[in-house]
Structures are given as C-alpha cells and as structure tokens.
Amino acid sequence: MATGGAPFDALSSLDPETFTGESRAVISFLADYYRDVETYPVQPQALPGCLRALLPDVPPENGEPMEVILEEVRTHIVPALTHWQSPRFFAYFPMNASTAGFAGEMLSTGLNIVPFMRAASPAATELECAVVDWMGKLAGLPDRLLFSGSGGGVLHGSTCEAVVCTLAAARDRALSRLGDEGILRLVVYASDQSHCTFQKGARIVGIPRSNFRIISTTAASGYGLTADSVRDAVEADVASGLVPLYLCATVGTTGLGAVDPVRDLGELARNHGMWLHVDAAYAGSALICPEFQHHIDGVELAESVSMNPHKWFLTNMDCCCLWVASPAALTSALSTNPEYLTNVTEESAAGAGVVDYKDWQIALSRPFRAMKLWVVLRRYGGAGMRAYVRRHVEMARWFEQALEADGRFEVVAPTRFSLVTFRLRPRHEGDDDAVDGLNRRLLVAVNGSRRAFMTHFVVDGKFVIRMAVGGAMTQMRHVQDTWELVCEKAEEVGAVLK
Image 1 (tube, one colour):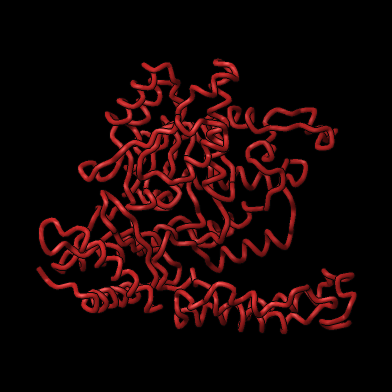
Image 2 (cartoon, rainbow, N blue to C red; image 1 turned 90 degrees about the horizontal axis):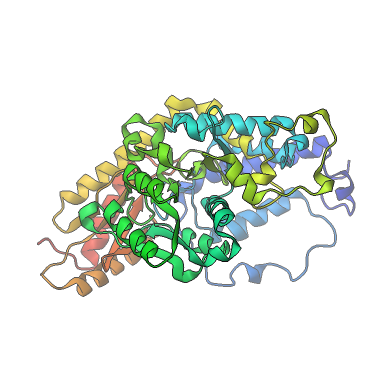
C-alpha cells in the first residue's frame, strides 16, 4: 500500500491499516503533548500573522505523510497556542478534557453518524435520552425536567444555543395568545452578572433591544438577583403595557460565581407567566455533589435548565445539557417536517413518543455527543466525578484562605464553587483609581510570566482578578505555585502591606 504522498490516497481514505497507523501516530503525539504541557508557557508570545506567514498560499496538490503534518503541528501550531489543558490555566472557565472524554469523542467521530432524527440512528437518539436523564438525576433535577417524568433533554454544543432555543420557545408560546405583532411588547430580564449570550439570544429571536432589562445587583446580595428588584422591573413594564416573557436565573455567574435565588425568582416568574431559565453552565457540574444542590432550591419552578459538561465535567468540547419541562413548547418553535425527512416506517406510523432531535435545536445536522458523555459517566461514575469536583473546590478554598491571610489582598465575592475573585486592597480611602491600575499591572505581570494565566472582571467599578480552578491536570501544587507567583508579582508592582 502506498504511504503518504501518493496523489490518490483519498480514494482509500478509510483503509483500516492506514487508519490504525495514523491514529496511533496522533494519539502518540497527544500523549507527548499532555506529558509536556506543564512545561509550556501557558500563553504564547505570538504576534498577529505569525502562523499565516509560515503557511503556503495554496493547499498542496499531492497529499503528504501524516508524520510531516504532525511535525508542522509540533513546530508551527503548538508554539502559538494558549494551552487550555495546562495545569496552570486559570482563565475564563475551565475547558475540560480527559482520557474517557477523548475516547468518547473518538468513538463519536469514528462512527460519524448524524443523529438528527431517530430514524437516522435509533441507538444514538435513545442513548442521548438516557444520558441526559442520568445527568439530570446526578444534578438533583426534578422529574418534571426529565424524560422519566414529563420533560426531557437534549445535548447542544453550547449554552448560547440552549438560550436561543428556549427564548424561541418562550416567544412562540407568548405570541400564540398575543398575535405576531405582540413581539414588540415582550420583555426579557437578566442581571448585570448574567452572561452576555442572553442579550445576543434575545436579539436573535426578535426581542427589541429596548425590551431587554439588565437588573443591577449589589454586594449585599452577593451579586445575585433579588426578587424585589426583579418584581419592581416587571411591575413597571406591566404598567406600561409590556409583557414579561423570560427571566434568567444564574447559578455560578461568569464574573464572580454569584448565585441567583431560584425559588424566589421561580415564584415571581410563575405569577407573571414568565419562562424561567436556570443557567448553570459552569457550576452545574458541582450540583452532582449534595452539598451544592441547595443552590437550585426551587428548580422545579423552572421551564428550562442548562449546564456544560465540557467546562468542569471531564467531557471534551463540545457538550451542553439542556432540560425542558415542556418538550412540546420547544419542538413547536423549532420543528420542521420537509418531505425528504419523512420516513415511511412502522415507527413513523406510530409517531407517539419518538424523539427527533432536529426539532430540539437550531441546526439540522448534529454530532453523536451522547457517546462522549456516556463514556465519561461509565468510565468515572458519579463517585469519581464528585471527588473530581470537590478536589478543585478544596484548591480554590486554599487559595482564598491564602488571600485572606495576606493583608495586601481582599476577596471580592464569596468563593462558592472553584472561582476565586480577588484584588489588591486600596492603600488609602479614595484611591480606587490607583489600586485599579495596580491590579491591572499585577494581572499583566502574572500573565506575562507565562507561568499562569488568569482573566479579570469589573464589578462596582473595581478591577477584579479571576482565578478559575478546574483543569483536569491541575493539582494543589500548581495552585500553591501560582499563589507564590501572585505574591512575587505583587511585590514587583509595588503592593505593600497596610
């Protein structure tokens, strides 16, 4: 058999022997990468255009051997990557990977099916129905949101998609009684800590920008929404002839890890006929631990809940669980039934109870995500995943305690999960501008060392540094080393004890 470089290798592109050899080469490459990733600078020193200058202007006319391609990945691409799997990556939120997640992704990609409806791959649909129920039960969700009860779930690629789909469902439910012209009266509510995807999603489904309410939060409520603040906004809109449509409650906000009171907001939403969505994209993984389930007290009042196993549940990108109380509300807004997707079978004649996931999402095509999440759950189990989450929570609490013991720093918001928010304290009353500059320099110095990577947030006008613990390879020693780095750089930028 011809090796790489032959003009017509594409004509036997799934030859089993070639597949085995080249797959082993890729796995070996990745194993070396994970073995060495701790030694790489977390962020590269890569100027714009650095990779483009190394690539030819046109693709090759003849194929090249896999070893040549992998060598260019090693020499051209890896040096210009930000290493999200580095144990010293503490920016944004974690983006988990694992051996089981990779194995599940290999199976999904290798089988390469497109399970947009049950007839397109019955086992894939049924596995997805089972695995979203598994996840919901682990997280303590009520039967109302599960297939085993009266609800159901789907695996999307991201929370952004889940938000657009639930907004569309809420919109169509409201317009069925208001008429299409009523869209100009619909109002969406979220806090100033909610993810920006809710504003984007509202615009996509046609909600006027002027009808998106961003409700302020304060330190007094731990930067969570209060029912009173939402009620005031809702009642003012109702008095103006507007129609409250959709309310977002977040469990673990992006900036600070804040938690909105789900029960209070759920009762308010029910009283005003609003769709309550609970966004637990990051912190939803922690809900598998009983000690965190009080954060979703009242979730039985929600119309939908979402969380991302690809963040903190050892499931490689991409994977977002969305649960809904009324699958019919979702599919009514999203379903399409062209003749070319109609299958004349006994199953289609029966109809009832058949899930066609094309009607639960925006796109028609979709990957076999259920395989990936199923392998993770089978391989590590609930007990293993709880231990994994708790380890990161312990690391974050250690870092928080180190901050509290050092007079130069203050913790900005309580560390509820594994996100720590902190800053250097003002030296004197009224020098907030100066201390913001000091914290900016501190973050630049930490990240510039390439020995760790963090990001920032601004709350109450204050520049805040975020340290999100949750990497699959992160151990306590990495957190402790990063604390030493923060102290070292704080001294360099001129921070002194009060």
